[in-house]
Length: 169
Image (tube, rainbow, N blue to C red; front, side):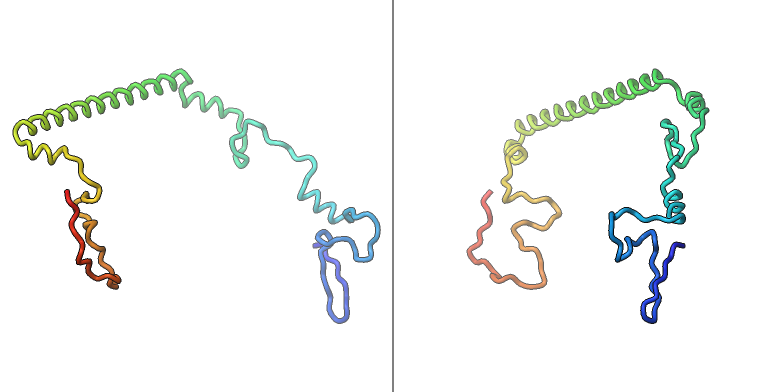
């Protein structure tokens, strides 16, 4: 290890030569002062002639093999087969979407027929079924009613509102 030792009073201070700056009394340009060991360290950390990996490598940790493309071609079919499979999958998706659309159209038609029969037989029920609900009176079944206060541990400031009236539907 590159260590220099300086003795000051009764203790020894060790510094690394490659990590420290120039000596305190040094005058001149501020270039890096190196010795043989620090040159070797720099050469180990930053080698000048590093062999570059081939550009067609997939991973820096896996060594390159020249026969990989031949193996890939043997296992995977060509581009034409891939395109055929992709087109067939798209046709299948389109057919499934058409079937879903046709099913939804049939459901809508049956619902409209049922509503027209309901209008002919029970007009009051039909009005309730197709009437628009006000946002103030709507609530999701099973959830806590909107017009009631959610239960808490502490009572609110106004315990009871005597003037409260239910919303008119």
